[in-house]
Image 1 (cartoon, rainbow, N blue to C red):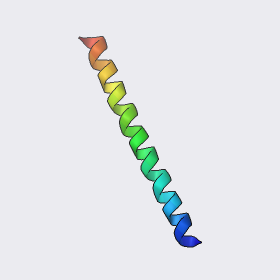
Image 2 (cartoon, helix red, strand yellow):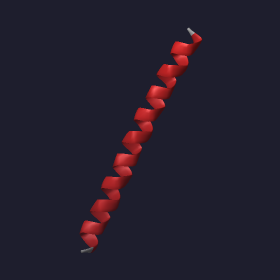
Image 3 (cartoon, rainbow, N blue to C red):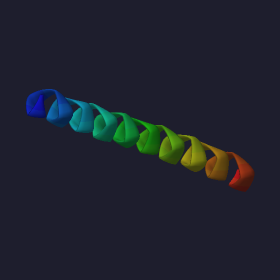
Image 4 (spheres, one colour):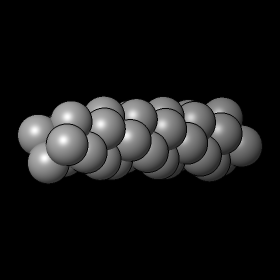
Length: 36
């Protein structure tokens, strides 16, 4: 049971990290477009 909980927390953390990276990349792309 504890193992599955750890796995779930790890999966959610990984998902949040990927979302943050995607948002950051999109934000940078948007900034570059507005400045150019």
